[in-house]
Length: 335
Image 1 (tube, rainbow, N blue to C red):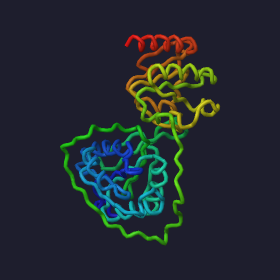
Image 2 (cartoon, helix red, strand yellow):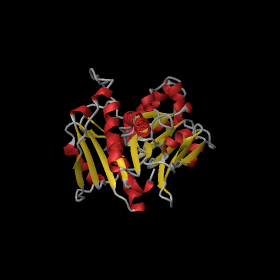
Image 3 (cartoon, helix red, strand yellow):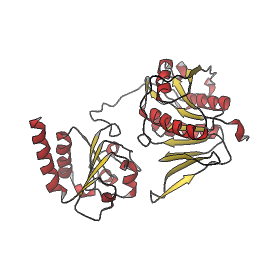
Image 4 (cartoon, rainbow, N blue to C red):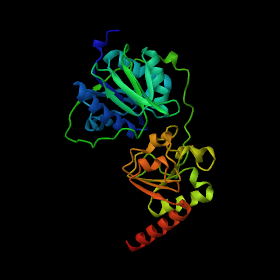
């Protein structure tokens, strides 16, 4: 492989039903940073049916170019058509780096694409950088989160990484940015389409996704029971927050997995994060340490969570949380 032929940083701009997912904008922001470090351009890959009008928003987010494959075969995500499309773009335009969001779609698409183009993939990265040799330094938790491993793909291109939603920070849109939008013709191989979509059923969700929440009230093993979570729910209700948890509470069956924060859950970056009864194991910190302001409540003054907290309260949460809720409710009534 002649690595000199591969230039630029590509980002898979995931969209669903005509809406570009936030992780795509986060990755474009990171790609912009990496590209400026090595003097390359950022290219967004936009796939779907009747999605061309979305291209400009990707340029405003930081892309220099958008490659669009607009085709009925890509209306809904199916592994084979999307893999064919991304593989075609890679072989045609030869990117040095490809970034994909580690969503359900990205985790399915990334390995298929890397296998087709015979290169490596580093999954669930939490940090990205570029070495002096232009190798992508892809850092991710390893051995159950007990250490961080930095992985390099030296011999093959493109270097592919999937990154969890919420890990990278989205840049503000710049309406004045201009860029190139290229509509790419794609000849699919329908004989390889072994799966078809029969129907879609949407699960109605009344709760806000915790990755989108501005304030999170999160409970750990110290919460102890459903009654303990009722206290957290009351606090969350008083400040229009969402309730989340550590893995221990999910394993105990007290809260759904979609509410889990941490290495095996979701990565969040709220304005305020209440860590109630959470010890602060590295697996949990990996999912929330980038929160703007962290408030920890724990009766163990030696709990690791206090090392990352902006404000720590050493006390029994069953006594502190109701008092805090009461104070906040009174403050709300005054306003």
